[in-house]
Image 1 (cartoon, rainbow, N blue to C red):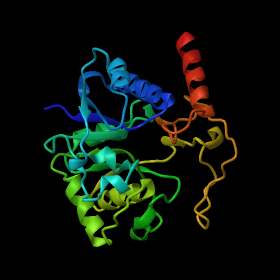
Image 2: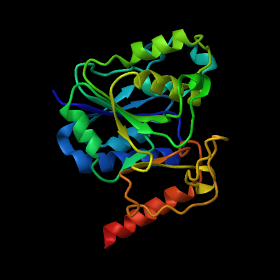
Image 3: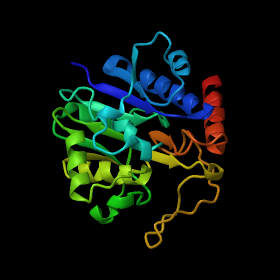
Image 4: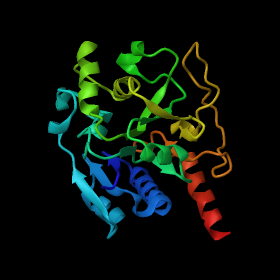
Length: 265
């Protein structure tokens, strides 16, 4: 039985779909037939997704709110990132990686190899800020990002998320920061393999900035413009935060330019 690699995309800008295509191309180039591949979608342009997938061995799956791991009302949770875990698992009997559409892996990740070689550990990626919403009280100084996670065989993410949700007031509205706090609070209770924030670099959308100079007292980063030298900074992946909402993203354009230059050398 092959492990699973799945992407999720919701309503997105043209850049968001383009980022998904780049992400798929990169993973298939690096990992080939290691995984069974899926794209899960909601509120998306299905024709665009079909064109991106083409004739490659990738299965498109329309998501259903009925598979939401927590019993919240879809009507008051428009745009929630809980969608990425609808359902929590495609196959609980195998290794499963769940990735946002805006994460692009540029070189093999040693933690993925370690994850696939074991059956007892998750993957959690560090986050540069405490983006944990209503579940922030469940964390000390640790910060994790829910945009890329690894789930081992037998791990019931939906059940773990529901338990944390019920134990902490069962909030009716779960926004993006709430979902990240809920998901990672559930996952950090189990044994996991950590990926550093430098290895998976978050590239912010506002002004095309990168997260930098975190201040623990204010829980804020310096959002001045920091040019990212893609492919030369040692990172294994880039997470283009906000690209699904933003029509302009300076670093996304820079990434494509630098990638084209590398391919033509």
